[in-house]
Image 1 (spheres, rainbow, N blue to C red):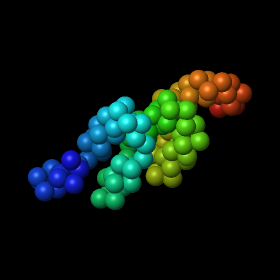
Image 2: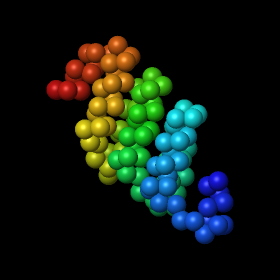
Image 3: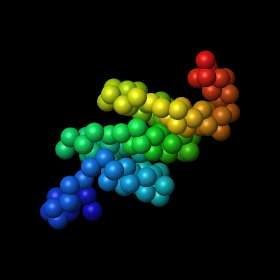
Amino acid sequence: MLPLAPKLGVRLNAVSYNTILKGACLRDGFMGALLDEMLSPGVRPTVVTFNTLVGSACREGELGAAERLINEMVRCGVAPNAATYALLMRGLCDADRHDAAEKLMF
């Protein structure tokens, strides 16, 4: 679908990519390929973009990936918000990493 967008005259923006990312994460456990594709034409990811990916990583127990995504988020100039940290906290607690969750709070 994405390669067809320009041929059909469709300009993808952050909302388009966020919608595709959410569907892909829910269906396939897909993580970051669309982020790279999103960045290549210069579409800026938003906090929603990263929170979708962080949430997916946490649900899959990929806490290292979630932490790397948060670092990438900051590198891209997107500030993590309360939802970002809530997703990570939930992932840490679900993985019985309560000490790490507690450190995140303080």
